[in-house]
Image (cartoon, rainbow, N blue to C red; front, side, top):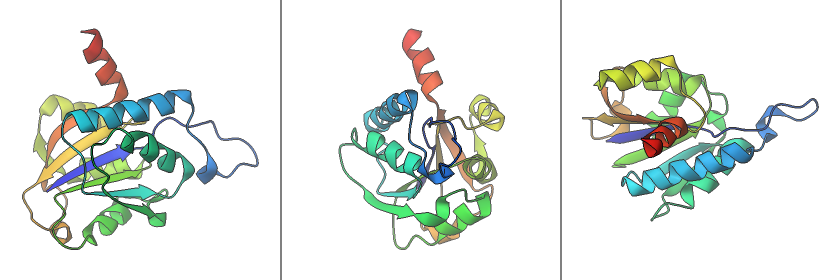
Length: 175
């Protein structure tokens, strides 16, 4: 099984009177979300199921990302992912029924960053160290598991397959 953990792209600053969950992507966020969607498509990482927080910025991130995908996965806007912690997010993932090879979870920090760090037991040491520093906006963490069903998912069971950010992609393009 494969889990793609994606933090929403860069959003507008919080403004007085505007609920946090209603914040939109800013220009950089729109570009970064499209870039990450293209990356996912180019590297054949298209999920079978996307669990997306119901917040506006996560919905917009998904819209920009999914526009680049060759296939449209099943999509669930999951209210409980909004500001969910690591344990709550893991509980949501464990409820996935049947054989779903690749799942994408799109949400918020610090929950997603903590989730990714808690699930990973092995993988590229340099990438793991970079991930320990943080999960930036539009960051993508790809974790592989030996289990066959999501209800068996547990801490320290995964291998970090890759950790990609808009900044790391831009640096690679310049190299």
